[in-house]
Each structure stands twice: as C-alpha cells, then as structure tokens.
Length: 337
Length: 249
Image (cartoon, rainbow over all chains, first blue to last red; front, side, top):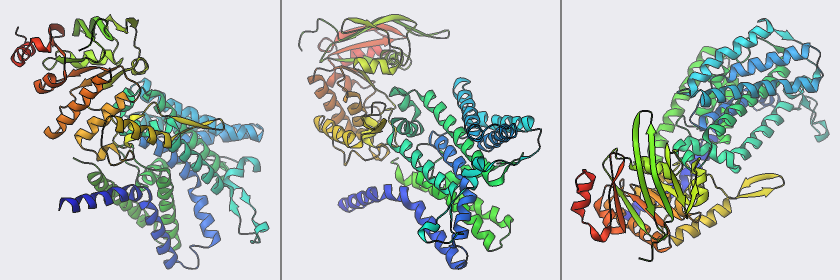
C-alpha cells in the first residue's frame, strides 16, 4: 500500500512541473480548436491571426511587466497610466519636431522613470503594500499626462515613429501574397518575451526575483539586496509600459487621454489566467504569453461570432475566477502541510 | 576535545537597543573550532537577537566581534558570510518555490559567461549540490525537487547544507529541531555532530535539553538580555540548566 502511494507520489512529482509549466498551453490550444470549429473560414485566416497579434501587442508588454511584479508578490496598478503618460510625452516631443530616434526613446525613458518612482516609493518610503503606492501613481501619472497635453489628443506621427506598432514585414519573397505580411509588433513581442524569459530564468537577478516572491526573508538572509531588486523590477515594468506606449503610438497614430484606461486590470488578468500566483514566486513567461493570447482570442472570437461586449466581460471575469481557483487547488496539492 | 585556546568567534560586551527596549546588555560569547556551544534562555531572553547580531542582520548598539582574533564589523549578512559565519534560521529561510540546489546556492549562484553576459550555471549547481548533500549524507530524491515538497526534517537538512556549502567556519543554528518530527530530530543532531568533526564551530540555540545534552560541549544561559551562567557540559546537569533558564542559580 505504502509502495503504491510512493509510486503515485513520484509519478505526480514528475508530472507536476510539466503541468505547472505547460498546462496553460493546453487550454490555449483547446480554445484555438474550438474557435476554429466555430469559425472555420475566418478564425485561422492570415488576416485574422495577424489581427489578434496586433490587438494584443501593447497589452502583452504591460502584462509582462506586471507579471514580474506579481512574481515578487507585489502588484502594479499604474501600468495603464504609465503607458498613457509615456504616450503623451512621445506625442509632445514628436509635435515639437524632434528627430524620430529621439521620439522613439522618450516613452521608454518616461516609462522607466515612472517605474523607478514606483519602486523607490515602495521601498524607500516603506509603503505597507505596493497596491497603495501604485494606486496613488495610477492617478498621479494619468493626471500628469493630461496636464502636459491639456487633456486633448495629439495626432500625426512619422512612419519611423509608427514602425514598431504599425510596420509590416513583407513576405512576398516567400511566395506569399502581399496581404500576407508579418506585423513588426509580432516580431517585437517575440523578441521582448524571449529576452525576458532569459532574464528571469537564466540570470541571477531573475532567480532572485523568484526567491523574493517565494520568501523575502530568505532572500534577505541570503545577502540579496531585496530593495534594489524590487526597484529594478518596478523600473523594468515601467520600461515595458513605455514600449507599450510606443506600440500604441504606432497603432493609433495618436496620443489620447483615454489610452490604456483600465488596461492594468487586463494585464493582471492575463498574468493570473497564465498561472502567475498572487502569493508570489510562481508563474512563467510562457504562461503570461498564453494568458494574453487567451484574452485576445476570447475577445476576437466573441467579436467574430457577434457576441455582445457585455457577455465578453462576463466570460473574461469567469475565466479569471476559474483560473485562480485552479491556482488554489494547485497550491493545496503542491505543498505539504 | 582538542585545545580550545583561541576562540574562532568571540563577541565582547554586545549591547543592543530597540528604541527604549534593551534587548541585550553587555553579552559575551565565544566558540572554538570543532566545538558546539549551546545557548539557552527563556522567550525574550535575547537569544535570537544575539544570533542576528552575529549574522550581521542587526548592528549592535555597542560591543565588538572578533573572528579568528581579528575585530570585524558586520554591515550585512553578506559580510558575515564572507567571513565563513553562517546562520540557520528558525523559520529556515528557504524559498519554497525554488529547488533544493538553487536554495543552497541562493545569493551565491555559480555563473558562466556567454559573451559578455552572465548566465546561471545550472549543471554546476546540480553537481555541487549532489556532492555536498552526499558529503553530509543527506538523502533527497533529487536536487531539482522544490523545497516546499520536502518534509520538515529534510528542509532543516537543506538549511544546514546551505549553511555549510561555502566552507563555513562557524554555523549558528536557531532551534534546529523545533519544528521536527521525533524521528527526524536524531538525523539533524547526527548532522551537527558530523559538522563538529570537520572542525566547524557550532552554536545551537535550543529549548530542548535533549538537543543540548546530545551535541553541545559547553552551554551558556541568557536571562533578560544578559549573561547569566555558563559551564562545560560535563560540569552541569539538566536540572541546573533548566534552573538557569528560569533565572535560578
């Protein structure tokens, strides 16, 4: 009997890491299959697939930033506002006639500085929880964005500035048709995600980010400068929001006051659906990508089927609750009491 | 026991205030190579504070630390680690979400250079972990197992392995058997005895007389933040040590 239990346990121990890592991909594949069956002509067409990727392009940047923060058992509510402020800074610099290579780095710097502000506030001002600091900056950054722009949209950027969000990589040399292009934003998502995957899994700083989420006092006792790592994490989150602003500038050709409104909640939802744990220390970059895709496909698929946006809200909300319940079950199973 | 002339680690006149509270007052402590010092005392006697001073987590308000005869000022746990002073915390200070190997090397991970970038060397972590666990005769299924999947005794063993992975000279253990099942206590005490044989100085804080009397060579008692009594283990008894904890001589 005991032997049987041991066998069961060891099989379970072997399978568990794979289920944790790749279970979410199964869900994604399942969704794609269901959508394909429901919309066989449209859903997997070149046009629609690239469309999904274009739609998730800037959200995927916010989600990746928020994910790193969630791994440390923190939260960043200000990413949507950081993106809006960065976008407004970009728009103002562009309208002032700065050359394109200056314009494209301004949102990255603005985003980074906003993140640095969050990180410094959380660690140096010893805020009781990152929720409070970033709730404050959610208002501060959006307010600042409106102040500097006068609260009105600023439109019209050059093609160089719009390249990352709007650019197309021609694939006619592969024998494909002109309409079958690759969005530059898709390539950008892939590059950024691969870089951050390496950073989180193969660098010491990345490992320490997971360690802080797992047990901050263990990290501190190991000689890790926890505050420094947290400041890095929030700064990178801001930086990624800045990249999101650059993509959005390309897609919409405009800086507008409502940019990224409530997108922090979408970003958090994508992380949670993708298996990141609010308790910290758990979750993968691949999972976040799957989470972003699941939300993107759900919206796209429901739009294709002409389901009202009210139902979309209900469905996305339900998926969040179910995903977190799965996380709770996984914690029960994964740890010994 | 070999000759204990020169202490490996010595603390003199350690005083620590937290605001208006005096946690430690003029406390002395010393431990020699290959020796195990037991530190006893009631809750709030200052044991944990003293250990945190020794590990560099707290800065003493006054007093000095000598390591191998040389005065040292510890600004952070990193400083004490660099000297070879390691701490096994009561709450174990392990990250449950990381595998055994990565916990043992947390903060000191071996890396390899690829171009100008530094990457974690997972093969080396695994190799060193297996060698080290083997040396300490600690049995786990795999170095890749996550710490949260281990039993209390296995976690304690990992915490001790972690403290000794970098040529530790002094290992300080805060209640090493407190959270363990009875059958696991013996294994941890064996581990402490084998550490002593390798010439490591061990400081054990414990409430359990069984622990103190099975691994320690000397025992000292703290009472209300001060040195209260100290003796070679052979010159005292359980009842006397229990009396010290209550403040009776």
